[in-house]
Length: 200
Image (cartoon, rainbow, N blue to C red; front, side, top):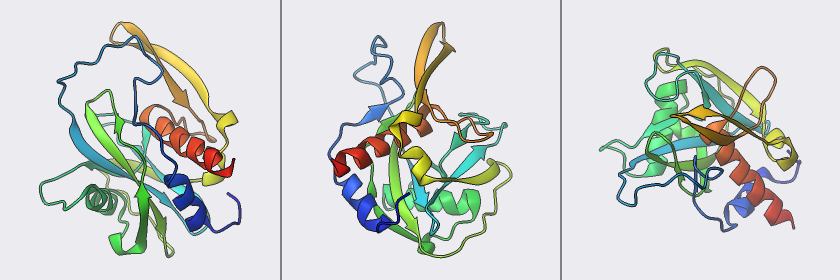
């Protein structure tokens, strides 16, 4: 990450217009039902004082996306006043991040997952030091990756595997021992595109 004002650069990137994304972006042959029902959800794309992004490795016991690398987050509950509030609540529950320690900068476009969630990525800055406390039932590990790693479009790869009888293509952006792919990689790819577009 450059040592330019990270808040200013992130706000500028968030102001770049772009379309919604989905797990089907690289699979145009998939026919999506126009009347499909999606569950509202939100994730927190949190950038630390050191310029890192906070990520989690989901518990292998979870029903949806077990063992995958993900942002803290989950579905919106009735008591949540907004998607931003949902992202902050989930981050507090999953990794012990106090909502008051995060400055919300804005949101990336909604992302539709294969598990029928409409996920809003909420981007925020951590304004003080933080030691994560993983919630054992949902999170097996919390780790950090430099934002600069995700802002280089050249680092993203397109890979595939068979899923429900067909070959599915998706973005990946590995980091050390962590295999970052699917919705998380697609959301980060969208941020990288906006970051690069803002610099042009």
